[in-house]
Image 1 (cartoon, rainbow, N blue to C red):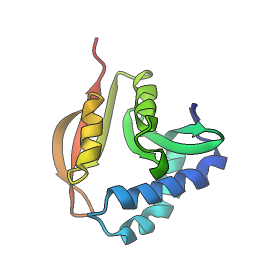
Image 2: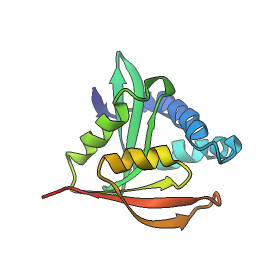
Image 3: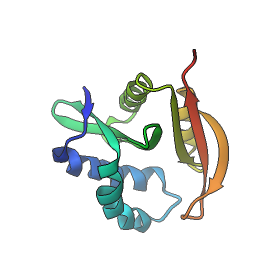
Image 4: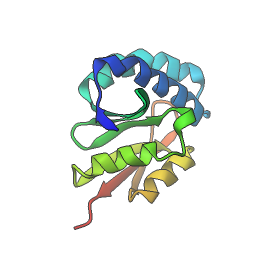
Length: 143
């Protein structure tokens, strides 16, 4: 089931975010992600529209949308990966909009391929504060 995030989900969402960030971005020191924890929790999560994927009363993944059309986060618990959670969250958001943007680290080829399979295309490449480049990607609904 996919539903809107509630404050009670914050602990699970942040646990997933930290664990998945460290795992999927192993080219960036884990300390960076730990330092960003409170920024994500206190600044980004409150201003995003976040959807959670819940199975058997457990949050298995989440997707956050900023500014109406920018996917700021899509993370799935490690033991739930490869089971369609991320795909379901993407489809859910794609059904309610015609245009989505996101950024993904160049080194995170698995994530880039995941997004490309769901119709996202690379628009540009840019440097980030981490010193690593990321791709800016966009999906536009077909008419």
